[in-house]
Structure formats: C-alpha cells, structure tokens
Length: 376
Ligand SMILES: C[S@@+](CC[C@H](N)C(=O)[O-])C[C@H]1O[C@@H](n2cnc3c(N)ncnc32)[C@H](O)[C@@H]1O
Ligand code: SF4
Image (cartoon, rainbow, N blue to C red; front, side, top):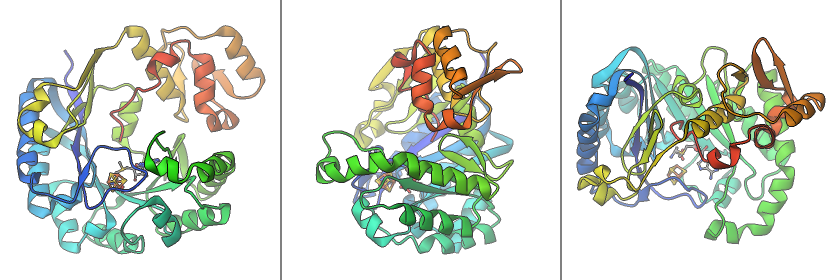
C-alpha cells in the first residue's frame, strides 16, 4: 500500500470559544495539554506503518500556539520526525500568541507556513461574532514571523457577519492586502442550526445570506485585481503560494489526522477520533467515534466535487462516476462550466455557485457532500 504523505494534527484548545465556531475545542484550561501532546505523539507512533515521508504537515485547531513554546515545540518535534526535506509545515496561530521568540522557535522547529485567523478587523463585527482578541495584533505577529524567516503567511477572513456591510468587508479586504500575505482564505460565515448564535442573530443572518453573493463577488474581484490566484472557491494566493496541504486533500490524497476530533482518510477508509480530550488521552483514539468505508462511487464523486471547486477543475479521465449528460449540456450552454483539453472546470459564473453546479452535475453528490475533511 502506498504510504500516506499528508498529516494533520488537531490542537483543541482555545483561550475562549468564539460564538459562531463549530470546530472542536475547549476553552479555559490547559491542564490536560501536556498529556494531550503525549497522546498525539503516541497516536502518531501507532499509525507509523501507514505513514511515509511527509510532504505536508498541518497543525490546526483550536489554537495550536496557545500550547506555549515548550509543548508546541515538543509536538512539532514528534510530528516532524518523518517529514521529508522540502515539506510544507503549516501551523494555525492566534496573532495574540505570536511573540518574536515564539516565531523564532517555530521557524527553528521547521514551521514554514503560518495561518493567522483575523475574521474581521472591525471591533464591532468581532464583538458580534463573539470573538476575543484585538485584530490590530495581526501586523505585529506578521512582522515577528517574517523577521524569523517565515514568509509564507496566510490570513483568514469571514464574510456574512451579523451587522456587516459591503464597505465593512471592503475595509477588511483592504487591510488584509496592505499586510501583503501570501495566502488569503475568505469563507462565508456558516452557522449551525439550533445554536444560540443562530437564535440570537436569526433575522440578521437571513439578511446577510441575501447579500452573500455580492460580498463574495467583491472579495473575488478585489483579490484577483490585486494579483491573487483564486485557486479554490474560498482561497486565494499569490501565484506559487497555494496551500500544498489543502491542495493535496482536495485533490483526493490520503491523509492521517491525529488528535481529538480529527478525521483521516486512507483509501476507502475514513475515520474520526473521539471529540473528547480526556477520553482521547486515555486511549480513546483507538475507539473512533465514527468509521466508514466509502464506496468507490462515493470516493469518486467526492474527488470530483472538491476538484470542481479548484480553478483547475478535474480531468474527465479521472472521474469514473456518472455525470448527468443533460445537466452537463445545460450548464455548459448557460455558461457555468466548460470542457476542453480532457478537463471539466467551472467558469467564473459557475465558481460563484459551485455547490449548486456540483449538485446538478454529479449524481452521487448527496451521499458525499460532507467529504474532504482533511483540508484545514
Ligand atoms: C478552525 S479555525 C482555526 C483558527 C483559529 N482558531 C482562529 O480562529 O483564528 C480556521 C478558520 O476557519 C474559519 N472558520 C471557523 N469557523 C467558521 C465559521 N463558522 N464559518 C466560516 N468560517 C469559519 C475561520 O476563518 C478560521 O480562521
Ligand atoms: S474560531 Fe478559532 S479561536 Fe474561535 S473557538 Fe473556533 S477554533 Fe477557537
């Protein structure tokens, strides 16, 4: 069996939970962090037979940099034991946690890409998101990381925030671009039904959903005009600075995810670790909360769905599943997709409604819509 070359590790600790967030993490205490780091390294050793020379390692969260220098360095040393030369090593970071000393130690440990969560620079919108911290720290964090030699920096924004207007978002995008990151992710706020955030902002979220296409178009236009490559529906990079880890996962590569709540996909097998830090530490990673065997058709449709979100599209030869010929024709005639050179790819108009296009085109879409979890 071909060995896995992409590794994700989840650090489920945050200083404070943001009201909108649905990622697995706990806030308020780091008491379990030392035992957690040991458990992740133990899990990695137990999965050793699956893992080859790593091309990408992604440390995500939660807030990995909240672990503090020593624990973070210990975790990285464990994860990077099998990284190949030239591996992309990414870490998500909270700008407030980046000091010049931590930046230097991250660089020395092998981290060469850092993704900083901004979401919005607006104090008002951050308050509406229930997000702590001061976005003014982003510039200082980037300065420290660059001074330490980490140039490959990404910033994350969110649009569709309660109370957000087009000028608000324009101001966020302008501030992001002034900081000259190599990479920008800009996701529409997704809110889980039944959460208190959803109840609190129900009417406003509906309003935001109506504005979402305009927000999205403005972000794409501004980023592309500034020279960024719109390489995935929600991701932009200066040419050559695409996130290799995410590209691999979106391209259907196998990945192993370590840590509480992490997903892995190897061949047709997919599993998820328990979302419980204490249980995970106690060996709970051997009793996954969820395990499934994908059918080849599901795997195929998932590959196509994720591939069609990429600017480069998918090869026709690579997709074995059913494509609805009527829809293919209709979508082409209406200018949502193109075929050529043995590929299918979405046009600019199609990329704005990528989910809808995939739903029409790929007949196994429904079963696979939750796929592709290795990307961070
Ligand atoms: C899981 S977070 C981890 C990064 C870090 N904890 C932070 O918040 O900055 C990774 C990124 O996912 C995006 N994200 C998280 N929750 C989201 C949501 N409900 N809707 C849209 N994007 C979200 C944010 O842009 C965030 O920077
Ligand atoms: S958005 Fe980031 S910092 Fe906020 S709770 Fe989620 S993982 Fe933690």
